[in-house]
Image (cartoon, rainbow, N blue to C red; front, side):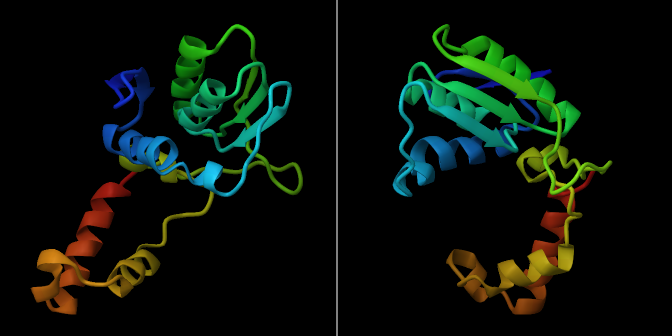
Length: 167
């Protein structure tokens, strides 16, 4: 198991430092869920579907005492890190249930695509390299990207994405 210390000084189990820092920034710094009016009260049941390594679950447990939390994560390797992290930081007044399953419209067997460098993007849907290259090419050019022709930008993006999303 690999560990790192997050900006909030918590030592957590991770799959990749880069992925963990990206998710940390989203959850703890950008706080998108709180901006959207999410209102959790003590005693509420909270379900974290696709819990990854548990950073959102930890965030909620820090913010709201005495909740019942159910966190679902289907990818076994990611689930191991989730278990370690929630065990280490679960407050005694909260009830936590961790489930190593996926959720779908009906019961079925499925395989997940696991991407160790960007574990938070692991999913049942295979990574579509061409779609992602088009997505990044459509973004406004900033910094040094402004001087690169599209063909060179596409080559750079394609190769970076291949590296990030290698199994």
